[in-house]
View 1 (cartoon, rainbow, N blue to C red):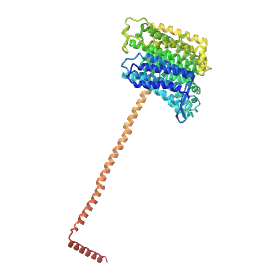
View 2: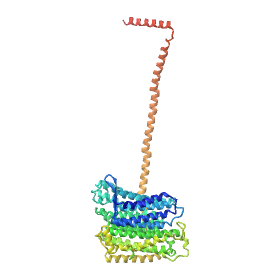
View 3: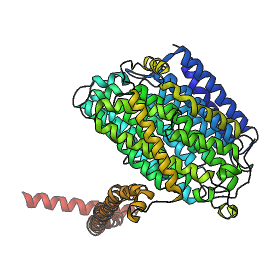
View 4: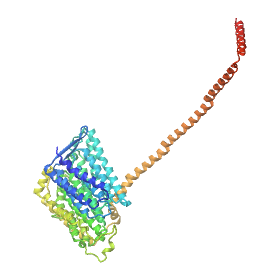
Length: 623
């Protein structure tokens, strides 16, 4: 048993716990300590990816807590650790001196540690534990500024939505035990007995779709944008939302074991990619645009998992992690500097802060799927896997890729416009800007921008074959030359139209605009279909409890008191009266018996004579 897997998760979990407990003290040392722990974790992740260690420990009777770094998790541990280093380096200059940096950096490391457990777990128990820690820490991070009610409410909505979907994993674990998988090993789940196999699959799919903000759970990601920008960069690139997609990629054999799971997951991903892409197009808030695009881009990974494209989904996941991290960090840098994240107010922001502007532009063009940047090739890998399953899936995925070009180029158009004369009038709408970029911003932005641009090499024939061997997906299809050309042409055409429409917006029905701008009214639908009925049922049950159950208890108590009062009357007026009468008679007899006891001898003789006379008379009369 290797100690390296335990070290890999102990570093962020232990370091995060220590930093979280420091509180606001030693605020200047906390960022450096947090980055140091993240760098050490990255070193351990690289070592684990090279050596592929395994470890396990007994947990319950017949169950183990197993960790292993195989081909797929090797890619993920390095990705998660690298993005964590970049984000924490950026965050070191983002917080004011009075803020609780210990809590922030500690929670970020705890979250990263939970994600590392998720991607290395080989059995359900550690996966469930890490899944719970991710949910709890994400709630705390989204609501980091908890004194602001809207941010605390946003954290609650995000937590409760994902928590409801997470129940699927518990359902899957119970069904696995019932289906004969007592060890709860992930690779044994496809061998469960029917019908438990279908219950396991449904539970895993629900939990994964909820965590990855796929339809109909996507709205929680909009609320999560209330958290600090570094939180968005970490949670919504390589960790939180990627966890569900990773789980589906890990459990492709489980999806294949049923007739419905693979196609259902593929269509869920394809429809999310298209629908949330349209939502992103309608947004005027930069972070909301990036949030909707995250759901859409994760949709491509889910589409790959449903189509059996493990290597394709992994390529998309890694490329998207770098791309979305740089975009969120750039948006955060502008928010800190200018105090706004509204696209109209960010006109010329790329010119005012050129380094951030270059990073954002490269990241956005990568997100648009323009050749030769990474997500162009990654999407084609996904679409090739989808085409083998269904032409309709391929068509929806291609349409979603075109929409991705539209929302990405829209963002670029705004930030690259000439700086208006009254630019300052739109600043400081969310917070008071510093008008400068923190000195910790350039290094992580440049590193992530470079990664976002070049990670597409994983889709080239040589690296693609290596990746397929690494993740054990040798038979996956590769895109044909015409597919690469078609997707490039579609992305370029959509980008050109988006650039033109940005300056001259095309008319559209107001109802449709309101719908997509409001995230398809998904949260309102959830409140109508789930929240209100549940609260109504709770109120009904509370009323039933108050009036019926509590009423019965109160009536029973009143009856008991009445019976007690009656018993008291019977006791006082009957039993106690009889006892008092007997006692009074005994006292009277006692008084009569004391009267002859005078102490005079002649009276005793007289009494004896009378008594003797009475006895004689009785004897004579009886005879």
